Image 1 (cartoon, rainbow, N blue to C red):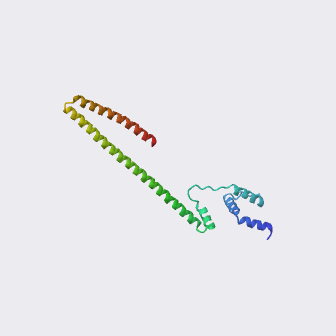
Image 2: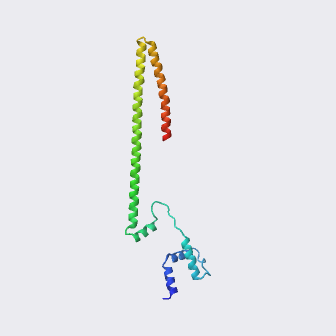
Image 3: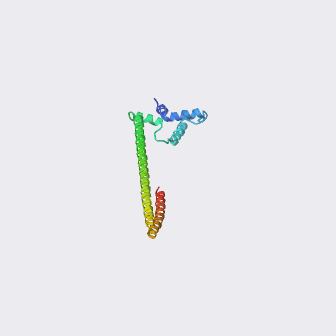
Length: 170
């Protein structure tokens, strides 16, 4: 077998011949009048500049098949790895969501407890003020009533600042 024939056979066994066939199928007149060696050089140049792009978490099917050729069950191993990663991510997100729900429930319970405590304190202070007024100690009862109103106003202002800070942190 001559060296030219061997080169031609090697060329046809490469992906270059695949590209050549595709080009000739797409446009049969594309290589008319161009010597065979020049055609091969053009195809080699074209092959070098072609790029395959795939975006996604897994390789495309052709690449998976190539992994199977290189590594026993390579494609299957890659798929299992992707499935394990997906399971891990879903479990992590579930834990995070459960944690956030638990934290929100804790904040709600704390808020309700605080509201009940405030209700008991204010009611107690009102009863105490009423009791003082009922006993005839109008000045002491009036002062305690006004002081209670003043403290409730300060508590509301403090609440506004606390709620505003919580909103900023979220």
